Image (cartoon, rainbow, N blue to C red; front, side, top):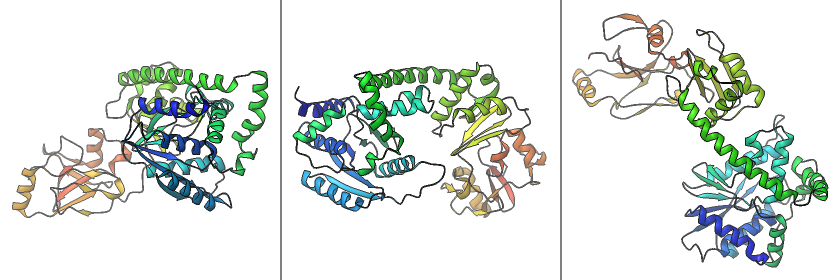
Length: 428
């Protein structure tokens, strides 16, 4: 097969496996992304219903970045496809490398621009995959890291596709030259202060001199690790269903403790991944079985990392994003009880009152407000008992960190509803 046919052929097979109506092409203007863009345009007769768009992300890290954006716009205009550019304002911090910061911001821009059901295409190729495997190995990664980049995955409202992972970079270079493409050379790609560039320019050539076909071998290893990851995820999901807690999205502490230590760690990772939460490093993850699981039943242990908190209440293990600031002293008017009410700082909605309740309240002329628990508040239970709300929450199994966020619906000064608690219903 001629070299210039390899890229369109690989891309055509990918699109046949993963059909979508809209492609958003990550276009830096460099050789790789330009070749991908050109090949996508060449396939339009084969996929006439496919909409193509290109997105250029200007990191603002190079003096000529504005000129590069103009170059990309001109190329897309010549190819007859839609183009947009996003300019970033990166603020390097002490905890994140410039590479990681730029990548994170770039993918946030891609996600924001992606339409529901559309697919973002990147030009990552076989050498990129080999570099990723080595980088993750040097960081002490497990199966997930050594599986490197998957061919396709969910991404924001759509998908992220990498159709060229099995294509050698040399094939892209030859395609670009034979098609007489005009691409940008980013000088930062030569800076060996960046880990990936150091591997590319120093380490990989040395290894390839001893082991020819190294890039293909490492890419194949990533595929095998990816298959192992998928199999492991299936088995872990089945086991997670067996150790579910008493409340949705929780795990049973008792049943989790009954698992072998390696299984506990794997189950925790799979659980967090399923909740859409960021995964911690191994050391922080192991704090959960070391400190949270064996804690006293009446204790409230917690392990936190950026973007996630893991807590225990009784025999249930919870994980969620960090709680936002909340003022339990606020009082919210509920003027339209037939409509959901946004509860602001709790980050949740209050479901409408039943129609029968609304009719009775209209007859009574009562004013509805929504309040939140503060220590010492009493209530009268429907069975006639009078008890502190704290005790009621304890009986209802509501964790302490949720109690000040539970919506309390009042008709004038009478508590008529505790949101999310089915066995509480005051008589009107």
